[in-house]
Image (cartoon, rainbow, N blue to C red; front, top):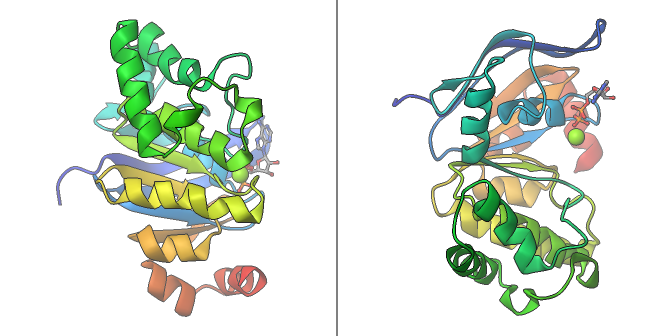
Length: 245
Ligand code: ADP
Ligand code: MG
């Protein structure tokens, strides 16, 4: 196997002094691999993926992302943030900027791209998520599904090597879930490394190379989607699946 793009080695994290939120996490993600993370609410899924782009810090163990070891070195963190795109449950678009401005902001100010190039790139990504005709609207004029597609396009504008998704469809009305999953599925076909927290089983079966089940800050089980969903080994994963299936 070539060098994994993400490596967790015995990673531990606490919130405050007492709350042990990640416990001895060992996880390697290969370049281009698509991982789905599931587990009960509060099990540490968001914390785990937020450590990958250093939105959260771990206190023990090693975490290496694309060759950069995440420690307190600010330079390393900036380096990693440029490679890791993230899409949140609540879209997190800037409401006072148009769709196009949301997409060009970071490439211009962080990536130092001239406006013309940033705009061309943005329009291309908006086409990719099939929403180019909304470029001049403001986020709140769009449906939730459209806003989430804009958020995905915005993340892609920085040409990340890794995309993190934190329950990207759980704030959406049911009829909008598919349009968002469809663009993620399409992206998955293009070789980008993906770590996605979701309970959308159909999606997991369609794109995941591996499903990871977390409970109480630990990875309790990991397997390919078919085996995981059809023959979960751990009692707690069985219990979890019986509630969501
Ligand atoms: P999940 O995404 O699986 O629902 P989270 O990673 O969001 O779980 O949270 C795991 C646990 O950590 C929960 O009990 C949550 O309340 C707690 N937690 C999350 N963020 C913080 C924080 N910033 N400070 C203290 N506790 C937190
Ligand atoms: Mg969460």
